[in-house]
Image 1 (tube, rainbow over the protein chains, first blue to last red):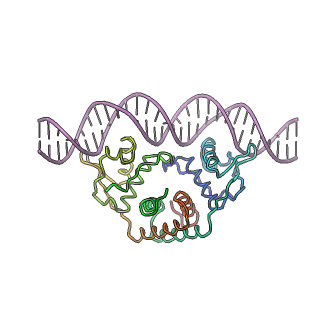
Image 2 (cartoon, chains in turn red, orange, yellow, blue):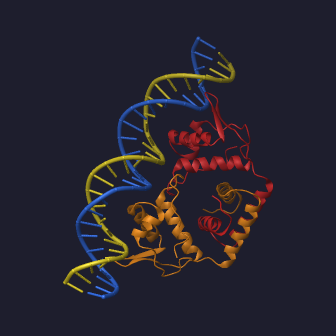
Image 3 (cartoon, each protein chain N blue to C red):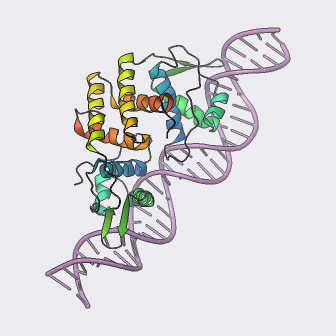
Length: 126
Length: 126
DNA sequence: CATACTGTTATATAATTATATAACAGTATA
DNA sequence: TATACTGTTATATAATTATATAACAGTATG
């Protein structure tokens, strides 16, 4: 259930609580954490992400405010709304990634390119 | 020359100097800032990105250390190595983005999915 | 050589992010 | 009800990020 969750990259410059939130959010979007699923206890997440408990709580609090999860005192955190993405989109992304990897380009570079192309080339969006 | 450079998103949680560095780096990678090109003066970049001059300098210093740009005292900052990406890659990314946008998915979500799929589905990488 | 541009360095201050640690409080169950 | 789990709150401290501001230094040009 939690095997997708990785340690935080402490040298990326991206705040840990943002990285943690993004990882959990992505698992929810991808359906790996389905609606109603219970997250690991905060004292486990501490070790999973290799951060302080307060950093875990900050990440979870953000997700709670965004409506992705909810907390039950003394019980646990649970996935709230299921916004899982259709297979079609996953497949499109996987195909795209395969092509890009075949071209020998690394993840970081492709993220930069992706963002620039998205924000400059097409319809007005985030 | 600088029309691709946007203001920093101060509510994203991503440090401004990281965002700035990424934007400039992406322009270099995409070839919009070709080898030898001069960047706008730091006192202009201040207003372009809407941050303090020290934040600009921090971003530029990082890019300098990474070998993307170099500084000439009293003259300016210049693009050092040209690591522009081949048209093929840009085309692949554009096609991918078109498909994804057609599916009505927003940028932020797709970035999360992209990262998860990249890091979990394929060959060991960043 | 004076001026106006360029990058550079420095100091002080504030806000944000992260840690360490402890205690408190709700829930489930033997 | 005692115990062991769960989330919650709080305090102190440190490191990082960002701002405001000023002064210094190199370069180009009239």
